[in-house]
Length: 118
Image 1 (spheres, helix red, strand yellow):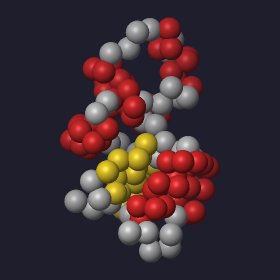
Image 2 (tube, helix red, strand yellow):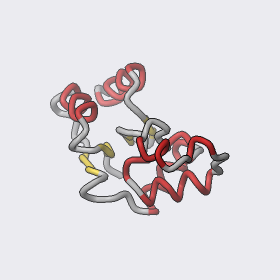
Image 3 (cartoon, rainbow, N blue to C red):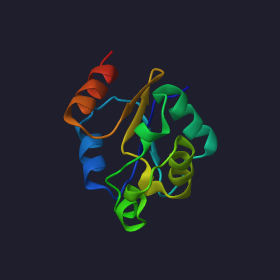
């Protein structure tokens, strides 16, 4: 299994994070807008994270505009919305050596850089 980052190439934050990675990072870049994630890929992320909710971005504009923040969403709902629209995946998602790193928090990115330096 190759190390991978699921990102959005049009997202400034994702671009900045990818640029900050060690030069020889050997990550496969997967642009989720150009190449939507498959059910299998989402299942793998779910296995590693243990939750669709952890993978779901509550910062997405669609989350508010669709009124989802006022609903009691289930794991099945989170999965369905992530598969329906790329904006619902919390980005970036790194899979490195069988571990998953979700989102753009400073701590998460530091952990990604450490994992890539091993």
